[in-house]
Structure formats: structure tokens, C-alpha cells
Length: 84
Image (cartoon, rainbow, N blue to C red):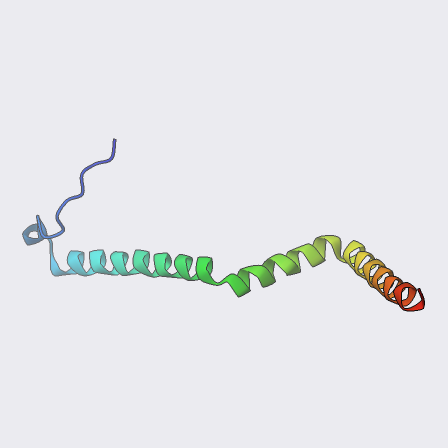
């Protein structure tokens, strides 16, 4: 079971100023990491770009061949419909 959160003001009289500053710095570090993680999650364009790059690296030749095949098919259908 989770331990109940302690009021940060409790016991601060027993801490030295250096300990309090270290605690504040640790809290700032955690907050910065949290903000950075949230920013990364909300960066849709960056996530899509990263995913696209990953797919290109894994399946580059197959994607290129598929794209060219699809283009040839579309051009063929357009030409066929214009003639018919």
C-alpha cells in the first residue's frame, strides 16, 4: 500500500538550509523531467516525424516500391477512364 504523503512543512525545522536547498533542487529536477515528458507526449508532429523516419529506415525499399506501384496504378486508371 502507498505511504501517505507527508506535509513538506513538517520536520523542516530539523533540516539544515543545505538540506532544504537540496530537497528543492531535487523537486525542481523531477518537475523539469515531468514537464519534458508531457511536452514530448503533446508534440504530435515530432512523434509522427520520428515514427515515419523509423518506418523508412525499416521498410524504405518496400515503401518506395509500393509508392511507385500505387502511382503507376493511379495513372493507369486515369488514362484508362479518359480513353473509355
